[in-house]
Length: 450
Ligand code: UD1
Ligand code: MG
Image (cartoon, rainbow, N blue to C red):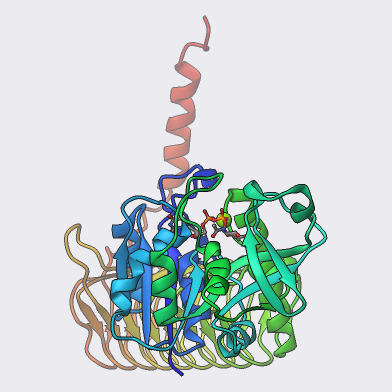
């Protein structure tokens, strides 16, 4: 049977105390809602509907960047989770199968948990978890053996119900036609004055339909509702990423100081030194070494390459095999062919560097003229002398050289040496005479403060 997803993401997240809609706060470098979508995507849904409200435009943009086919349903007033699902129903017209409702602020649901929920036989199945923490606010699952009788919200619960250690995660699976019927019948006669999605359980039973629950670990249902819970989720994500990398054969010299993005890929036998930060979109191939204090984002590092210490790879940095990018080198939107080296104090932006080419210390590709960006193309086996300014657009041919301190404004043919600097003049004895003159001038000056 097919599956459709509804992701609830209309809430403001008052406790975040933020102008940014809650689901756009980032976890492992990606907005929270993307984590929820990614978890849901493991069910290969036929349709995905995101219910947006607060900051709907920004939420739509973030969602579309990940899934261009997702439908956005707008909930202008947040009248409760049941109302939010109702808003999503028109987008499910013609769909018959199971609908899974997820929250955009709950990033850690596993594929196994969702698969088990989707496969559960009851007409309505709720995902719950056991806890010792006795949380305030969360709904309680009132059960009789394997049967779920109803869900009671904390606000509406009796002391005995509040003592139930089985909690509603918020995730629900329900037959599409039944869901439409149940949600349409909801009222808001409760302590919060909201349309509770949780009320569909008792309503389904009243119609003689079957209801049940599946379970997951509490950690999977961790929802974000404050900066503190966001930080806790980030810590959990990082701990998992570090452990995962090490299990995959990556050496982390100081694991607690390395920060991963949700999609970081590190090949076997890579080594990552202390205080390295991976932004989104980084792949590092087998055996590469990322040394201390490097920052990488949107970059690909080929096998056996060495990056850092103190290097910065920005989006579009493409390093071939055995490339060296050393300290205080920044690389953006630039390809470095295999064996190329830029070891010190260099900026390479919007450039192409051929295989085995050496970029001397202090080289800058002057890519920006104040209005437009221009490309620098450097061939293979070239040697760019220290302190070369390459004023783009410009081309350096294969096996060409630039003299130290050159300001290159014209293309250099293959195998040529370009010298572009003022010629040196030596004035015999002038250093000493100049010093004497300066010292005499200082002696004649009145003392400070007199
Ligand atoms: C909900 C459940 C509760 C459960 C808890 C788990 C209900 C009535 N209660 O409570 O049983 O233990 O989640 O976290 O369902 N949202 C909308 N539109 C709305 C209201 C909410 O899109 O009108 C979205 C929110 O943005 C959020 C999610 O739905 O992503 C859950 O809403 P929230 O207000 O956090 O529900 P809880 O009170 O936590
Ligand atoms: Mg909540």
